[in-house]
Length: 263
Image 1 (cartoon, one colour):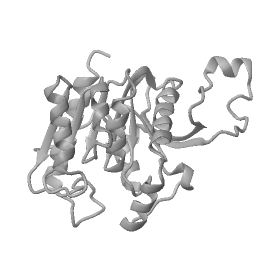
Image 2 (tube, rainbow, N blue to C red):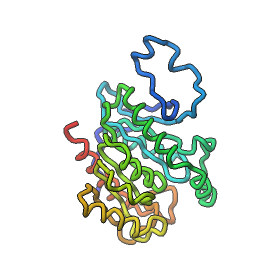
Image 3 (cartoon, helix red, strand yellow):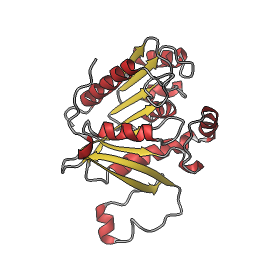
């Protein structure tokens, strides 16, 4: 399968950083008119630090919250963010390890320890606040959002899809189902990429999703024969499978396009 050309090239993509308090109301342009210092005043609340990518024209696009794997916000996920923006989305990537100093690692043992220290409830709050932040940007459509996650981020994407009722799409690359009893609350369609030989996100996780699908939830599962966990991560040659990664990306692009159609 060959990846089709994206609507935008990388030189047409803008980038920037964002920082806002988790779980708090995000200042709007109207708020800034009343209080010109509202966006620069230092808050005592925990801050969500993010990087953003968006097409540089005057059009508003659907927003995507992109969630990194347990390595932290590394160059691989930011490259994916820019690539996703090329498909016509305003993308925001939060530092999920912000409460742990924003750490990034290439060591699996350290990554596992970092993930274990995370509070899932607080991370879901951060992700929700990212959606509210997107509602204040000129390049993103209001409440037209999706979430895409990898590994640890995929597990959070599944949980978030069960929490935010206005979410339009969720994509999970080899994530765990951490709360199967919550799948009945899922409102958005979910695309799940399963690595056949995955020993982290197991068949039991997929079985939970299939059970929810049998009860009417809009869940699509794509399985990649012979693929191991993180088969889309080109920075880890031992497990990277280019053909499966390309197929998964093309499926994701098509799924998002369908999910946001008419918005």
